[in-house]
Image (cartoon, rainbow over all chains, first blue to last red; front, side, top):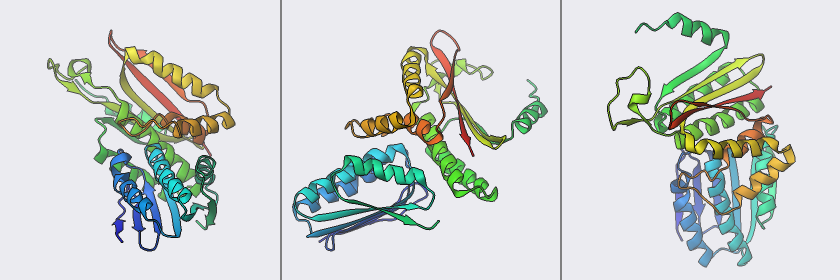
Length: 126
Length: 189
């Protein structure tokens, strides 16, 4: 099974997706001008993974900042996860936010309201 | 032409401008500007909460310029000598802090034919309460439309939501075809 790792830059997050263990992590900041292009490889790998997912898929989203251009792409990623969840892989999306960062907590709750996958809001120290 | 640089300096000083720029807004420029502003906010030892809000809103304001500023004929740009058929991209932005409040001011040319549409959108956003903004954001987020530019119409809603204030805007006609659009965003402590 494949594994993809995209190293972070000042405007894009580090992404690692290990299909063998069912572990997906997005960490850092996501503020590119063109986010569709950036998220395309991940979305494609999720489509591939959806055909033969692991029994458990573990998702960690730890973003410091993200722009509105990224927000629709992140929703796309979550929609792929929703389909995988529906197909039988147990998924929990851990949404990390820094203490006092109400905007980031609210952003997680927005996704939670739209996506039919269990979310866990995880507060971390600044 | 003599530029009265002291006049500029004095005005910027009195308005406590931390950073200002006029010209083409490129991806590389935004990377540099955001790095500069981030280190300035660190130096000022701003509360992490405020720092994040200012940074987030700044990203949206500057990327709005990047995606939406209209090209103008070079001849429109006042002092620069006009070359027929040549278009340029130019905008202005300033970031300042006055009376414990951050100000992000942007200005860009827009085709006058698009003024009504934008004005209507901004007025609609300005009418909404905090809760309505949240619902509107979620509806637009989930409407399945993705503009070619990748934004999908969330930028202004997000700015209004994060600042908790009305979008303060102004349109000024420049000639028959172009207007100048300015936006003044305030972020209170």
